Image 1 (spheres, helix red, strand yellow):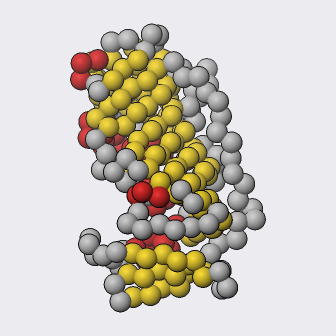
Image 2 (image 1 turned 90 degrees about the horizontal axis):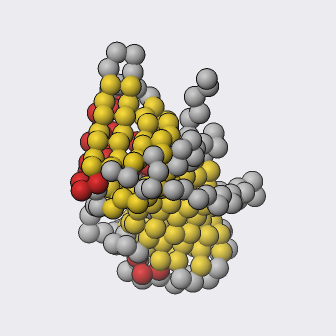
Image 3 (image 1 turned 90 degrees about the vertical axis):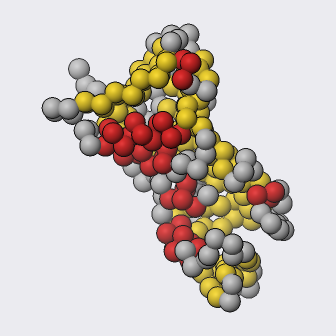
Length: 232
């Protein structure tokens, strides 16, 4: 969950509820947004009352690096000191919370995107890695027959073309095409590396909506990435 959030922000406000955790944030450049939810069933044990915490994501990830694969991590809120107490094996770490006063929760725009593609994450990451050696932007396009990822530099070009039968799902009645920052797109898709598929909703010169599950389907991640509009 933290690695998914860290693709966009260093600090974030987590909404804690009795049935799970949620978060919504926009990156500093206002190019991308994340909307994440994690059910209480994702945890071995979960007990909480409604509250919100401001967390330094980078610091939290560094703390979790102390854990071995099978370690159970306990996170408790010390209400008196307003700190998180993290226990990993025999280590106890007290971590100050971040002030959430200036953290405005963004609204999710209501987008009607005409194309939907469900694609193998491994396939998509392979296309991204090939593109990273060529350019800093990519074009995503869909037709009723398939999906295409293109990257074009000054001298070289990369093309990933998948016909409908090579996709998990394709819903597209019209040709759509948009240009995006490769850096943002790459970080978003690579954060889904442990998941089999990624869902993308696309339009022409519209944001791309990227969706995938985490934590054995106990959590959902929704990214929105604004397009790069080329001037005439």
